[in-house]
Image (cartoon, rainbow, N blue to C red; front, side, top):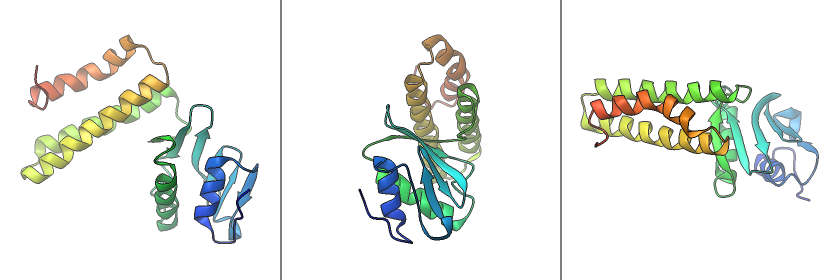
Length: 168
């Protein structure tokens, strides 16, 4: 069992990811966990699926405060090699999460279309494809059938073809 000091966020995150105890907390509950839920100032920051090695980081809390940002960055760094990570609204249904991803992609497509500088176009193009990759992994891990995948992503791919970001 890992020892956790009063302000040892890294130690607490390691303990959380290994699930070596039922719960733990730092001073004044700045960061804590109970079971599969990790908290930043008593707000759910992350949820762990230990069976499938999936870490869900709450996209609503992750940018809430400077401390939550630091907690999330620390969590990402510790989990990057051993967990599949998704930054999504934790309490959302699978369908709502897919909608969340498609909204991000559509926003990035709009930004790419409006960008005038090549550097910005490149940035938004990478955002589009990184989010598409993450959405595809999410759909695969949550056993959403290919017909649903086509239904969800078909309008996005149509836009990408029209923008000549994909080749037919």
